[in-house]
Length: 292
Image 1 (cartoon, helix red, strand yellow):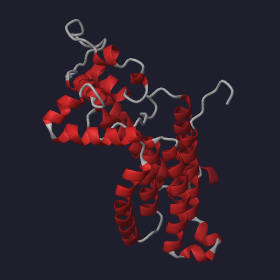
Image 2: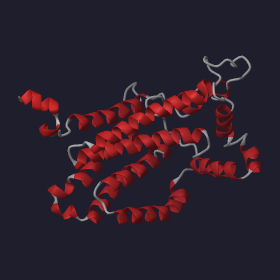
Image 3: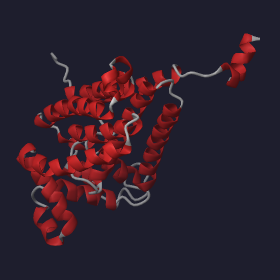
Image 4: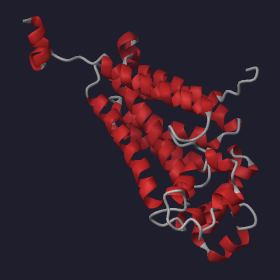
């Protein structure tokens, strides 16, 4: 948009949370035919699969993967019987091989294949270091060599150690690999503080969900929690070879204007749910004092 670069897939995730909250929360009250769980799941699946497929075609595998946990989390809280969720997971597992062979680009397949080879055999890992495994290999070196203190300004060993991320991938480190940079610069203690802060924020969102005024507000918060947990797990996991490299940013930390705006918008929705919660005057001493 002019000189401003916008990532539409991030806005699609926010729109998906709002639409799925309506489908699983209040749609059956407006349209009685959707009181059947199967119809709500079918409509929600269509509304989720279409933007997910468009994002995957972009191609943006990381943002497309956010839709799965977000959809499952909202179904789990959206008054849908648990057997439907199990059936849906089994259906998705049967479709995954087809999606892998016919839906992914060649470079995305190579990332997954390299990830599996690096986990299973040492020989394949050595062969891939100069190819597709170059980035994950050096990420492991950066995280593994950081120790407790790290190599950054707080470390007492900075003169004796060489920063891997500043040497091999300085430009990509500010967004996709930011958790690996934090580990290398500030060590285990620095990453522990970051994950503790994010975890407290997510737990507070779960607390807000328990006090939501209605089911739709609760589903909005659950969708935000599922998306945030996916972002954190994928970003941290791909830096330590828990998951393949997908390019998902870390909330509030990774560089990126659109993603930061979307994250702030998501937590604005959570704050709105908290502000509009119902508190009975009988349980609120302050309200009783005002009335008196």
